[in-house]
Image (cartoon, rainbow, N blue to C red; front, side, top):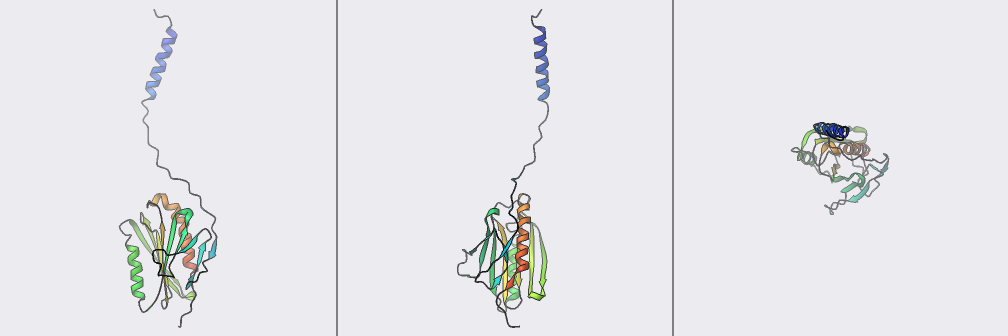
Length: 198
């Protein structure tokens, strides 16, 4: 007869409980993303030696377009906190408005393979002689928003938002939503500095 029946019984119960606990199947947890802190929305005038002007976020920096140094009216708006850039190009219209519009459209549709959809929204503001198109790209495209604006006689401006991260629409969605307000503010506040004869 065993000397310590109570201890042996307790060990047996403990082993059975431990074996039973191992039968519980583990389920993987969904992948999480880092929490992103956004600055408070505030805007300032671009105020540069350019033929156009618009409002930019106060948390943005403006630099010349380093890839096209001969184009003095092209700029890059950097938003370092969100690893984003808005590339702005400007061209004077010289009886070539249809070509400029088609070039802008074709640059947007180069992202068609990665984008799940491309939405086009016409922009018309007759009192300020501003006409254009806003393109919103959904999916894993490198550029989630682009637009062009023109007065249809002298000025043509094109903008493209790029986020310098691997395109993953789900993880970048909060950043895209935050920056899209800035792009819309730029578009809606654009003015031409030079008056053209009309």
